[in-house]
Length: 272
Image (cartoon, rainbow, N blue to C red; front, side):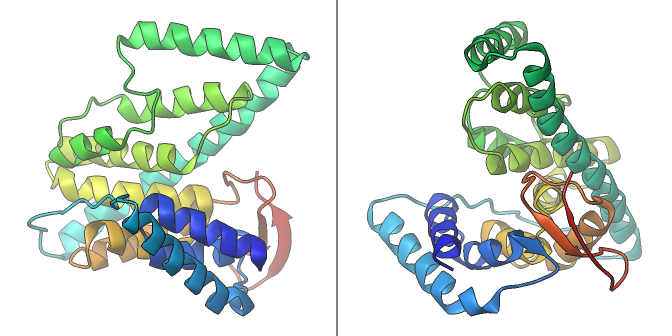
């Protein structure tokens, strides 16, 4: 419970989403089981951390959606297609992250050589791209996604840079890169179909985050806190599809899928 409280507090202070932070630590450890004994401690930790961060001037990131298209059968189908694709993107992201780790360890037994090689690869990739768009957290790029002005290949490049960096042994986050990836892919989808790139960016962020963390309730709450409640039916539909279709892949290899995503069966298996 103390570990969960720490997770909730750090998540809340960092992202400015106390509701999602309180639930995330209870939901992420064992998929299919919620540790409600930690509810009150996690809520208190999350709210206190959020208040402290706010008092130090750390303002939460918010992304207003503006006008949201009416929720119709047609728009529901388009968002469902986006959610299915986001589930596939989340699987690809997890495979790239874990695969890069195995490849580095296979070709570079010495961890110091591994770090050196990874650094060189990142430098070369940065020079090929021509700027440092994919080296940092990318919050500013997410804001550009909301405007529909990001490059089409941005989602894949972010996954590649993240996999190359973390696989080599450098320490960094996976959460913000997953939000970046989802936002860029959603923006691309919205531009291709001509369906509200802003909404698709928000839905893409939530759906990919759900796919890589296997945390649908947290994903729904974080979408409300970042984007407001007006897009609720879109977020709800996309997160449900992404959770179901993302399989048993995940960012955290210590995470356990306790109950099947498809049947009420106890399976107790680790994510890929």
